[in-house]
Length: 199
Image (tube, rainbow, N blue to C red):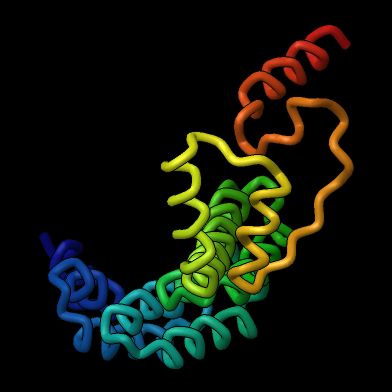
């Protein structure tokens, strides 16, 4: 019982209790006490970062992790919290850099790979959204043509996009089916898969 009470009143016990109860400001205060009392305990930095993130105090979240990394070195838990902060802020490029740092320090840490893939997908998603927004009129014209005709020849597609101010480069068609855009895709994919299986 005495040990349980001691843990509850220790800076770590108080901080983790506040974190569990979502009392973020109390957690920050207790983790600060923990860092003063035991600067070698990674939780004083990594778990404090979580509390700062919940308070939307992003710069403080980064600062406390950077302080921990400076004191404790490339510690796995701190690097994960550092990457998570960039992810929460949707700073995908920064997140990619931080996950690369984790992979360098801990090559077998799954988070360094999986979270980097997530950040990369998010950058591609944002790029796709920007392209769609930028070329919405061209996309609408293309969809209308496809709905009206069911398919569209390459030359017609080029002309259609050109009227929307877009130039596309295409290779010389290899066969009759390549003059239609999108139409033969499934057949060609199956043919390609068959060639790969044969090799």
